[in-house]
Length: 281
Image 1 (tube, rainbow, N blue to C red):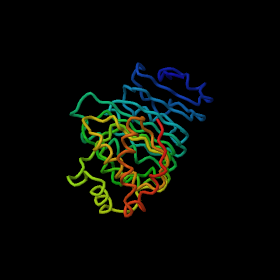
Image 2 (image 1 turned 135 degrees about the horizontal axis):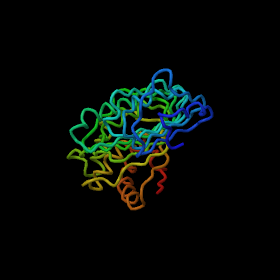
Image 3 (image 1 turned 180 degrees about the horizontal axis):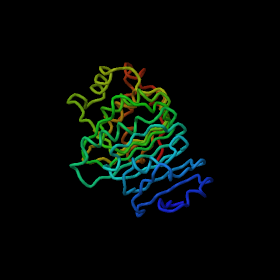
Image 4 (image 1 turned 90 degrees about the vertical axis):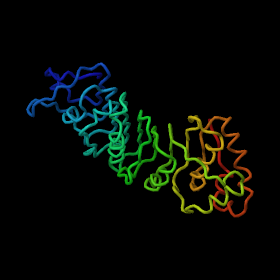
């Protein structure tokens, strides 16, 4: 079903409806009065694609506790007042926003991220998409701690990722896009300098569950050295990592930078898992 007309009585025949998909050119939703609200006892999947109206009003008429999948794409302003709560059965969530106005993005975009990561811990798959051109802040705490697959498209810093990963104890797959790189410190040009810098950091693993990582290597004005530094400083503290997805051109350079580090005994005991790392396109 691509659209359910709120001005008809078609709701009475929707007891078997399992999926609602509302597309871009759908008329704005009209909130129904209490006695005329639809009942979808078998509804399991909801998709709002480029939704033009107020999400809070539309979601009032949806039995959110039944949903297994939720996919929302809307203007940033449409999320005003929305609380992603009561999603008692949700397994997969895809929440994205777009915005043509920079003036509306901050701090609303950071509040958007806080809402998305406040979803319940039984969510297993989470996709987050933002169109912001400014740096965003990940929330200090997350509620959706049961995520196994996370796709994050947002201008968040690599420096903020360890705190996020430590709160996701069963995360197995991480896909990043538009992530912001940290500029390497001055004394990290040689393998020996890089090793000293790594060993001076917090040695605790940032994840012991992450198996597959797909970093964003097609970044704006970032040198290969900057890309390597940011990725290495993260995955060097992920002993469970087995697979990294990147194009062969970048994996060749990454291996060229990695091999000298594997020959430093003091460092090897921390990054031994990277010696068996498999690269896939």
